[in-house]
Image (cartoon, rainbow, N blue to C red; front, side, top):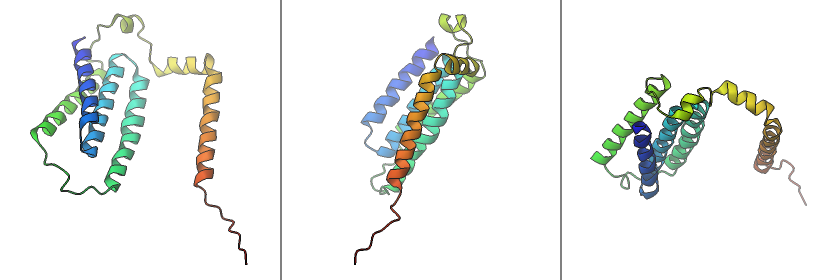
Length: 168
């Protein structure tokens, strides 16, 4: 349980650092570390699917997109402060979170959570698929139609009109 409280403290700390940091690149990096601590929580709760989705989608795709947008802003080197000991300390904490995630993934860390021990199959992809495609099939299909409609709308809005009328 002490691992849970330590990771919870790190989650809150890095979330606050995301908000209060003035440098936007550092703010995005703190947000990546915050999402990483969420991944550690999911692994401690035996929710492997949520951990993988959080890691791939949020940390892998969205945060990389944020970093590319910030780098396209072409921030000057004068506005970038020198790397302080605080940044190095945050990197060390992020490395420890990575180690805790790997240890949890390889089942080295034992959880003392009674709910997780009583329901050891909760959070597994196999069980999630069974529930998703049996009990929640209609909401799943409705959300897929909603996402398809949003994608078609985005393509239509981004498409240039090839018909240019010439009045002469």
